Image 1 (cartoon, one colour):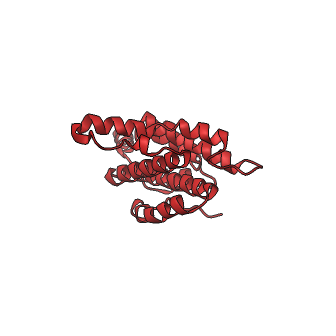
Image 2 (image 1 turned 90 degrees about the vertical axis):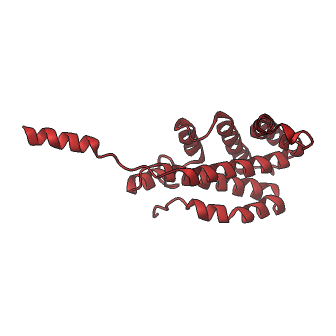
Image 3 (image 1 turned 45 degrees about the vertical axis):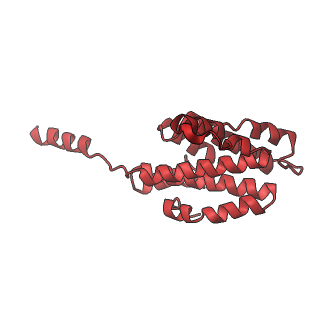
Length: 195
């Protein structure tokens, strides 16, 4: 199977309305599977934008054979590189666990399933965003916090996915592509030339 490059950030951004349509109009399982796939593509695009351009990067990020081809590995790397904070990382991992609860069950699973309710209750990114908004804007007093608006497990999941994907895409848009450093090769070549 041929390698596939990560989708470009502008293309992913243009697909957000389609994502919202799925999150608001589809059943629980399609919403979870598609939302997690979208976050996975956002992580791949972010890492692709951060890493040096070339076939090695594309090979690493390949969803079929790449060492960084899984949702979990991509989240781990984004966190390890300091691209995402601890709260985003924990919620990405929890979303991966929610996806696994849906995808690997031999029975029907929904947001009303106890396991999924427990996992969505662990999503904390919205509360962190609420705290940041309150600290940055004292006049927010009358607005309802996002974490309170997302009362149901599905609402909490949907709002978390929307906020995380937005953060990943915005971060990726602000990154400059790394360039390969030839400093080592140049210094080694100079040493060889001088001998």
